[in-house]
Length: 194
Image 1 (cartoon, rainbow, N blue to C red):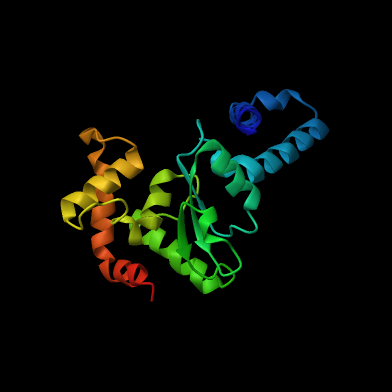
Image 2: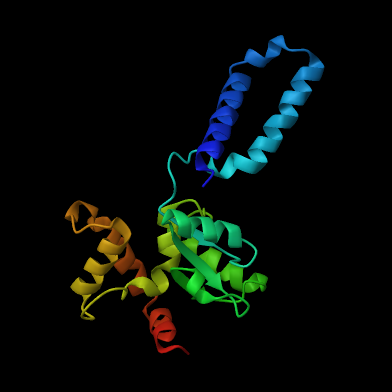
């Protein structure tokens, strides 16, 4: 709900970074430069991970739905899909795609993030829709498929992630099916509920 305000702060942050890189801040006194540097550090801490975010994300990946309840609630209000770890102390219906896991156990969280990293070749970025859907691809291939055939699952994955049947978005189906096939045993385990 406050995306426009955050977007303005991100623009300010990017502008300040640009000015520093181009040496435009050299005209200020030592004290003023120190104050600007401190502000830049704070802005980087707050907005560094989302500074290239131009629009609301298509999905978010939430590690702790209880701690980040405000983010989950706002995502729901904006129609953003939520993929989140569902611990026993959290209502799994809060997420569109709950991943049953102990969000308090570092090993559990690390395992899921390592899977994302192994698939993408980089650390998971919860603001990146591709990372979010790759993390959930362990069990999403069957989502919405009327028949459990490769083509039906591929089409369901493509439609879900692109929101359309236009085949120019076929890479969504291709990616999900490729990753899901690598983790077929995990998918079967989750589907069976054991």
